Amino acid sequence: MHHLHPLAFAPTWQRIQMDSILIQGGCPLNGSVQTSGAKNAALPLLAAAILTDKPVTFQRMPHLCDITTMITLLANQGADVSMDDQDRLRIDTAPSNNPEAPYELVKTMRASALVLGPLLARFGRARVSLPGGCAIGARPMDLHLKGLEAMGAKISVEHGYVDAKVEKKLHGAHIAFDKVTVTGTENLMMAAALADGETILDNAAREPEVVNLAESLRNMGADIENDGSSCIRIRGVESLSGGELEVIADRIEAATYLAAGLISGGEVTTRDINPDLLDTFLSRLRDAGAIVETGKDWIRCSASNRLRAVNIETSPHPGFPTDLQAQFMAIMCIAEGSSVIRENIFENRFMHVQELRRMGARIVLNGNMAVVEGVEKLSGAPVMATDLRASASLVLAGLAATGETTISRVYHIDRGYERIEEKLGQLGASIRRITPHTDMFWRPDFATS
Ligand code: UD1
Image 1 (cartoon, rainbow, N blue to C red):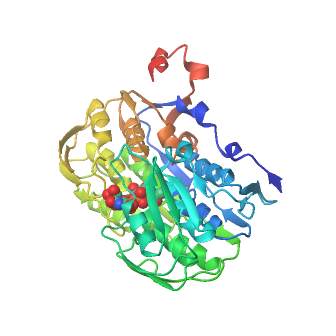
Image 2 (cartoon, rainbow, N blue to C red):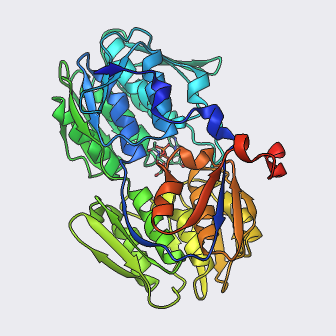
Image 3 (cartoon, protein in one colour):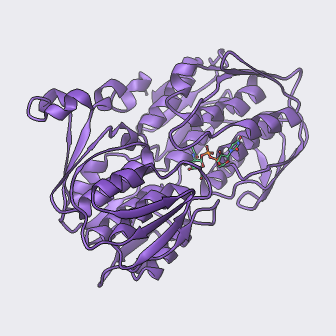
């Protein structure tokens, strides 16, 4: 076992801040690609390590910037971070003594709020910075706080920090969410795992990542039922043990690679993923005329003709995921006909539209609705990544476009896609990363990016 500085886990933030991705469009992508562990499943699993003073190991932990941030957050609280002899991440929060999540870390990743419930359950207090505004909308955490208050926490918000305390122990409560919230459900599920008595989470999120967390907590000795439904029951236990937790496949990553195959006119297979995780997305692709084949742990997509326009609207699982809205829009940009895309989860999640238009897409925006009129071809252009999934849509558009596309600010992509240029390169894409150190002299636009 060797101990490791958390930042050794991924490229340093400073280095990748200025990176760009250069794509020469027009090559059909073919072949198969392995699906990484899901970022959105891994983050709550890491936070769950706070709930026990025994070591926890993780399988299929993706190498991503957001994961580094969460590990740094745990290390900052005093946790011991190491790799075991099988090269799995191991976290031991026995030495943790600082129940705080500082602004410097929370500001880069909203999901840091996931430590609030576990800290409160384990230490009886927590101090977590408010995440602040976010590019894709206000994204408040009022529902997390309301739920913890119902479980007995005293919460004040001062100087940009949430200060939470509980006299003795959190107690169970019946919590009905006004709105379905994924990390809110996860936060309260973790808090309830160690609370006194029974908690019911009503109108809970049903996302597979929530189920992954419930299964992991059960592995550690928690008493949780009905996860995957909208009414989860948790009976608090005295303590949780350590264990080996396995991160599920990243359905958003897999879908993005399937979309890359389709948009470039090729055929891509994603491996190590249960196709059930992508039911709605795959059925919309079928509606558009794609040929979708599936096996126990793989999915393959191709098309013999130009895809047709299909309408979608985002909604909580099992509906169409908001995290795939931008990628689906990229496909619709070159489909035959007009499609209507409604975003029902986040109020400002259309920032890719402006950039896609610069590549020749015809999109009209009206509030939370985008009308996309498919064009024959997109044309490569310099564009800017604005958030994680928006960036993925620009990569897809670049793969389909004629000529060269440069995407700047790719640190957004690195938050959620492991080795994206390597995986796309293996499928036949002409793609490379440019770092300012090596390329700034021949690409002077980096001076301002
Ligand atoms: C998670 C995912 C993110 C995904 C989103 C929706 C993680 C780490 N991130 O984010 O990739 O896009 O689910 O599927 O899992 N809301 C409130 N008050 C709250 C909490 C949320 O009003 O206290 C609102 C939000 O503004 C949004 C909606 O509820 O409109 C859903 O957000 P939520 O499910 O909480 O998103 P996250 O959990 O942050």
